[in-house]
Structures are given as C-alpha cells and as structure tokens.
Image (cartoon, rainbow, N blue to C red; front, side, top):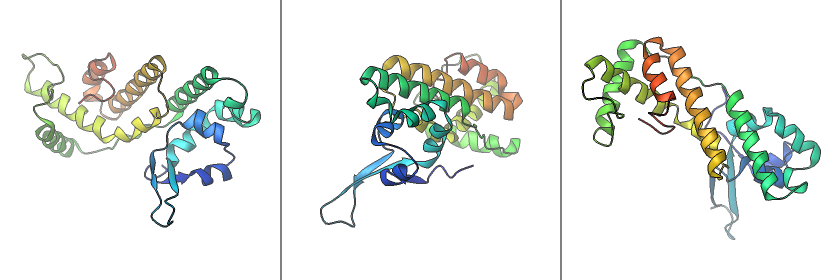
Length: 204
C-alpha cells in the first residue's frame, strides 16, 4: 500500500496531468498548507496526500475531467460540486480498507489501553448498561480499530455540501466497519450495530 504520509505538491500534480481546476474540483482543500521556510517571500505550500490523489486518479470521474480539461471549465460551481461528490464516492468504493491484523490477546490489550485513554467522553458508545464484559470488550476493540483507520477520513476532504458529505460519511462508515468485521469475525455484531449509525464515522 502507498505510504499514506507521502504528499504531492501542486507542481507534482500538474506533472501527473492535473489542471488547477481539477485539483480544486476533485481534491478540494490541500491536506497540508502553509509557508515555505526556504523562500524569503514566504511562498505558499500546498500538499496533497498521495494515497488520496491516487485513489481519485483511479476513479472514472478523473478520466472524464482530464478529457474535458476540468469540471470547472465546463460548468458552474453546482456541477463542479457534483463532480467532486461523485469522485469522492468512487474513491471510497475503490480504496482498499486495510485493517491491522493482530493476535486476539494483543488486540485486547490495545483496546483496553485505548479505552483508558479516551474514557469518560462517551466511551461506552451508547450501549446499554446491562451489557456484559464481552460486549464492552468488543466495543473497545472496534473503537480501537476504527481509530487506527482514521487516516481514511482524509478521503472525505473536499466535500462541503451537507448532503454529499453525509452520503460519503455513510459509505465510509459502512466500508470501514465491514472491513473490521471481515478481519475479526467475532466483532461482526458490534460492527453491524455501528454500520446502522450507532458509532458514526468518528465514533469510538
């Protein structure tokens, strides 16, 4: 898998065939932005996660935009926003969700430690008070794994419209919890509960 901490500059995107309009319409805001310490004039620095760039490049919308010279060149902001929404959804469907595979004892140890670190701020995930220790441990394990996969939230960058973002968040939530359930079948029940909306995209 591509290192998700690797970034591409705007100049690098242009060399890959991106236009400024495509960057704006399909990627949205940069993942890192600031001023370059190497230049006295403080040139702006805009960096984009390579994994996010590559995921968009695999989407059909990228090829369509590349042939047309960018969504913004063809239509107004509404069509540009729709193109970005479709590109993000295509990316979410295509991006592999790689869940860290741990021995059960190690996962339990990390989950308990994670529970202690986040304890107090809704750490019970809204579960019933009558749940047994097994259900609680499953919640903590899924919470730990969801937190370990938080880098995938960057795939939502560039979506600002409430309806489009909500749709993308639902898809990301489903794909992440489905991947966790596939990797750890004994957590499938808890993942299914969260897929229904209990855990949310950012839920613990």
